[in-house]
Image (cartoon, rainbow, N blue to C red; front, side, top):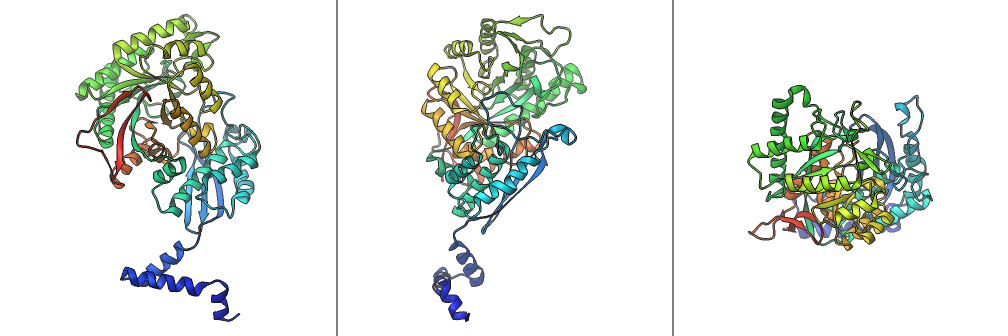
Length: 488
């Protein structure tokens, strides 16, 4: 084949001429580089290769990482993992081989990506997120993603989303917004974990987390400052009261002093906030994770104490009275999972009081049918989104829309086993969620998310819409806090 025949076969003469003309119009000082980039843009991007491997999460437990290749580059994603809490969430595929990682290996999930998912997606356009996700769902053929594994499926879904943004030459959060039909951009208010308990820490505190929300900050960078300063003041408060040996941290970076009551923990946080001088700018939230200590219809707040467990059970009505007192005394503005995941009666009764934001995590499990029931029965007013509980980004977009259509708030959440992947930061902005819960203002895998939100504010011209910057405190129509933003 002659050179001319080759040029004609691939229609290269016209493409080269277009590239040269573009370089002339641009008056570029480096025509070779300009023409090279121009030619690259003229080629539609497709998925050319997908390669997965097993890595360790922040707890030292295996999880999945994926490199997805297109003719525009390589795009990496890794997925978090958490405690499985019910039959309504997508299945995280583990090996079960007790001889390797105590049965927690994910080589089966990795193999499913490398041999099955990869074959199904090669040649697909990475900008077509819903088609990619549907292709994987069709390949899996199970409701709970148990054939391929939700960890395998989500890793590929996220990597494809990153590749799609690169192909469109837009920031990741903008690509997510476009995929979901969002036009309004907001930065989320961070919910910083400052004290850990429950299954996340080795102390006697029954509830899982005490958090702070810097709702009085006027910029996300200020919110980071408020969170960091409070965290370090809290370390001093704990040291003064219990000694430096009580400043160990839980899985998500919150301090884990050996306290036994939520009131004791709240007093510590209240003192730390007071020392910062930011009393009017910071509010307190708690994640009770009550399913952890629900026995039958009773709640054992001493379940972690060998000497007191079983001696002080509380009824659902007792728990409601306790929450009313906490909201009044400590100004609690948000309570997550105040009751067992099947205690619909008491969570409905508590939500009807309108005392604070009521967040559903174990109650909902990011499951559309559970969300539908909660909306119908007014069981809570905010969804905690954990993307790996549902499996694909397209399905995550749908449950966020489901929640927002009901005038709910949405909090995007990390997991106890995290990676350095900051994807949920872009997700929170792109889907205009309003709140992000990513752990303490320390530890690299947690700060990766918060720092990425701060980067989006600074790097992409996101600014406030007027000089009268105002924090929306408890927008009751949506029960969420957020900074309304516009793109400059």
